[in-house]
Image (cartoon, rainbow, N blue to C red; front, top):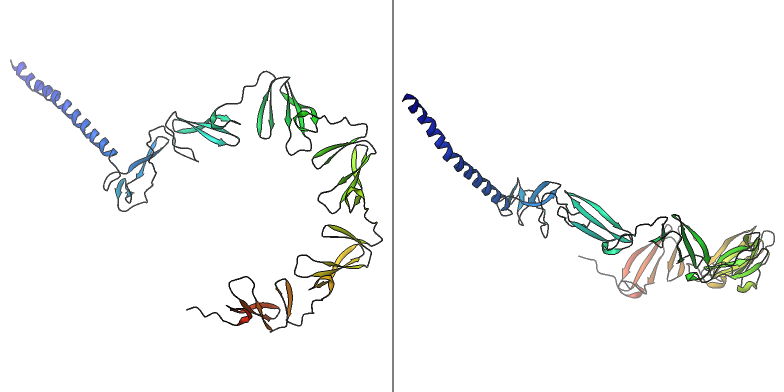
Length: 394
């Protein structure tokens, strides 16, 4: 009987536990749900900061409704500046953050970056890490891949495009920006080689076979074939001479003679001892040693200048205000100045002032003063002839 009474407290304890455990579990679950809901209620004053993104599997909470700021995990009127993303990208663990123009990617998602170089490339997000899953060298929008090489096949790169050739295949390619028009390429056991070079595009004209000692001469984008010892005249579109005679000797070309005119009609005179070549306005002049000659300048601070040849070198003897070497620039007095105005060179004495009318500008004229070799603007005027002084600004 005593034993039966002794078991009563144990039974009561078990009964209380049977009731308390489900209640406690329910309370914990309710509390967790409340916390979870609270974690998702964010952005307003006093609420938690909103989830911005994941870095790997780590959540970043740092966004609040403007103008609130995230301070200690809660949205406040003070704190660090808020990071705004528009629109806020929903993220989950395993997603990949946006970077370098690539958008946020969910775990397992892909993105096509196009254009990329000459083609495109496909990105894939795997457990928070974005990587290139496929490269497309020439195809945009990730639409196709380079064909798989067959046995003995070749890759051939031309003009930034990768071609795939089968073993033994020949194909014609036009050459842009080359001295040749086109060439035929052949694939043999994984290697490409030039089968034939052509003068024209589309492999239509074959370059003549060189005779013994013959030469190739590239001129104006065309390839000429010369025999050994052959000479040919070529007109020069740009250069100090009008044309030149080219000779082929034992496989090498050289310039035999240069001419002032085209079609090899005027030979440059042979230089006398100490003589000079002087290039002016696209023409080549020949001067004797000690000879002086006047040249008019189309553009410059002076109108003309006298050139002298001395022992093979040319130099400027004198510069002139006018053309035909008619007006010599006056010698500067001590502290004097040169002042260039409207294409003319003025000579001012030290301390001298002179008025200059301005054809184009915000003022009508200005007073220039020479001081110890340097010129400066003394006064600017609204009207010409230095008649109206601009009022001093308040």
